[in-house]
Amino acid sequence: MSNNPNYDALKAAMKSLHDQTVFPVAGKDFRHIGSTFMCRTEIDSVSSDFHRGIDIGEMDGQAGDDDIIAAYDGVFWGYREYSGAGFTVMLSHQFPTPFTYHGKTVKYFYTWYCHLDKDSSLPIVSDWKQGKHGEAISAGQLIGKMGKSGETNVVHLHFEIRIGTNNSLEYQLANPKVTQWGFDPHIHPMLLYQPHAPAASPSLTQVGSCVPGNPVVLEYAIHREQPLLNRVEIKIIDRSTEMAVKSHVVDLTLREGMDPTKTKKLDNLDRDKTHFECIPFGYHPTVSEYKTKIIIPAEYIDSYFDSNYQLKIEVSDIWDYKVGEILSLSV
Ligand SMILES: [Zn+2]
Image 1: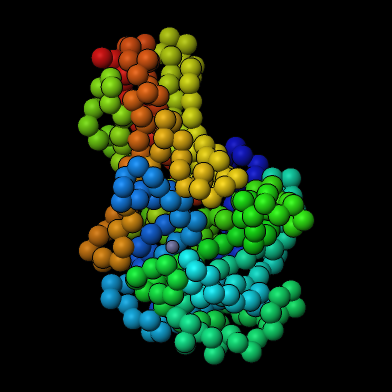
Image 2: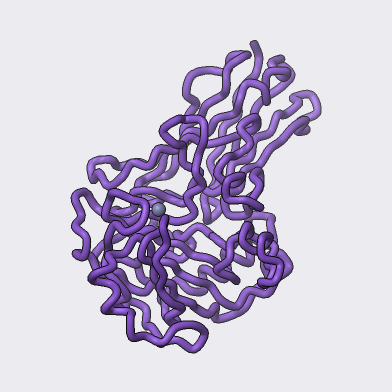
């Protein structure tokens, strides 16, 4: 249990699909994930981008080679060419049991398949009925071909799941006439799949030491087939009372610790609290671990460098598997 009713309801709903879900690229699996649902650091190392999907591909993949298949039984919602996401196919799916999320009843979810190869994908979908009563699509059915359309130089599939609505929170707020769900609908796509038996447990290790004036940096490492990090909670504990005197949470799915009203704000976490440095490792098969740096800035902890305080860090993945560390803040 996560102690959050929204997240527990979401997890239960996603688990109810697991028996019938399919990885969206035929012949590929978790080993071919090169980038995950995560705040990624940009090359300038100051800004980040909240990557609200997973990327699947391989080194030197060729456009049109890989079959993109429906991740779950559903209905053809449509296709569209976006400047960023490129040629995109969208499917709509129904949850077996509706559930309540942030006060709203969620009956449907949507899967997005982006950057498809237009030349080979358009003939597959062009004659299909679209929308609510669109073509019925079975899990595993061919819906397009992998490509690199839109803003990317690499052949890969960008795969997203949105629950309740296709509209981002920013779009909802900017368009008061559309249904106001009040939350940003993207969730971690790996919630759609039964977790592997852990090949290796995640590890959390401190990088450098706790020194006043410097950030505290920890590295979370996990087998590359399980890029599931979801939540980081930090607490400054008063050792005499064992109570937290200060705490901060970053939860990627629930969007805690970030402002989801604008994609630009979502992209840039509060950098005076806790943020991530996560370099997507791409499709190199020899890289066996997915690593994310968790950075707690100096200004957040500096006034607590005293033997009376400890810094407690707890990292959870999407299935609430937790790993933690307690660091002493004595000078
Ligand atoms: Zn992507």
